[in-house]
Image (cartoon, rainbow, N blue to C red):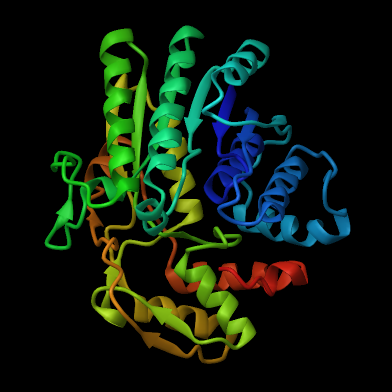
Length: 359
């Protein structure tokens, strides 16, 4: 199957692309390399995916990237097909309809996994218009072309942010999503509603995956992610600030990357004409545990300071029983092991990555 993956240079998108290639699918990757975090981090992800279909890296020297690739391949474990699929990458923007139309005409994908988005809850408060432009208009462009080119499955990467602040209970897919408390969350709600409309009006098969993060693991997004910041600060001897509502006792679902990839692929492989699933762990862990897992992996302490509350920060925990029953979704990773893998890969990365100031 040929699959278009938007956001293919990002953390989740690059893992999805490699998993698809390793299982024998042909991937068309798309990313615009926006400046939310450094371009070279995304280029590193793309080169790792190029290696997955036996291409040589095109940006980084193989000696620089091969140790990381080999470690990730080892973690993926014996699930690869003998003959991998192919990976073709395009730099472009989902808000550029003419560019997208040309890509669909040339590549003729059979399925779409749509992960490209303006990410980050706090940043959406400062720049709301770019979030609606990318996350709503860009999604509409992709849905329109998917309808026109008879795509047989459209997987939309949504977010737990659609539920707003629901710390009182585990949220189910039937819970109200009309009260998002961030512009980012609201833009994801809008994307879901448009997805539903395209399914009802045009019969486009759509599965929505509400991702419960932060998603962590090797090569986690290097900006705005607590685990990666904790890893970086432990390595560089810096003090980390904790903004959660309850300080170190703030607890959130935090899903390991391979478990999240499993959920997205199960959405892709399903036969549902339309459905919505939560994918997370359903087991919120305190930020104190996140810190302890990093300290254990490094074998040294991380100094932490609890500071003011981030008003846009939300807490919710996933009820994943529907995904468990209908998708056979089953998250497996223990955080201590997952963070150890994240730290082990971090140590293999080039020095420019390990000493980044803005994380």
